[in-house]
Length: 390
Image (cartoon, rainbow, N blue to C red; front, side, top):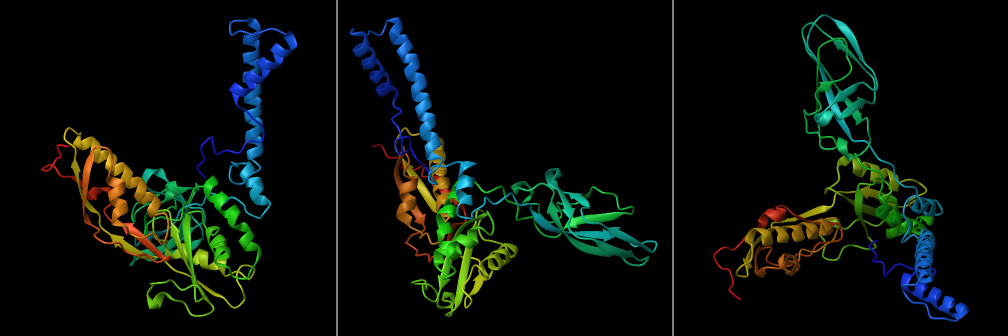
């Protein structure tokens, strides 16, 4: 929650000027004489007023820690405990690694749990299960095992297939290792803003009547990488949505969106399991987690500048503004694609006119849809041949 200092609630007045004025007035009333800035007494009063304002500011901050809207860790965690909400801890990245043993003398090799392998950037992963491999003299032996990053967090994500290729622990034989899928699922500990959002939604979870907000709350607690969730049922079919996107009575479809886009199969299964628990859903509801429907679009725009404007600087400003806009828009489901908004975002200082070639018309996006700009800031250029002289 972004708040300016003027928005913050105050339990007591902590304005330094007012405190100083009150102390000066009190002194003059008791001493019966006027106090001037250069006097020693005034310097002492200024010191006392400063300490008083600091103390009052600390008092106000302590009071705000009792309010969900303004609390920070660890006080926000304590407020969450009152409604049964706990900060989600960091999660390790996961992948699958194949161990390939060359044909050789017949023997049996045991790959124990927590066998270490490493990928790009010396990120280490460990196996989660044991495997027994029988090596034959005439055929290579391969086994695929699930691995999990040793250190939780996002650092383990993004290891492309083949990147996890170094065996840290010696198995006593020659073996080639390589991950068969990109590592994913790692997440840092839940931040304050996301935890605050779940605390506000928590009262919805006290009932298993199947409200949309309750399903949203439970889906968000499935994994901290989820930034938004759409809940669709027969009772609230999406206006303008496709006929195949309307569930049957008794069905609830959840569409989670993660920070880097569409969720993977493992995350969808996690959401489905979390929201299908007996204490979460009504007995008659059948919960299904689905990937949001992607609405990709390309952005092509040329900027006509005022004469004398630095083209490189203006283009950079426009790209920064566009990147911030896209990050906000693409972190939510159901945001329409509106060309006039893109024109407004690109109209940074130095731009006379934005010539937007794509998109050309407003595109409505249903609540379960994800509007995604596929080319981002690379679609913004400068119209060098038509600088305005105004």
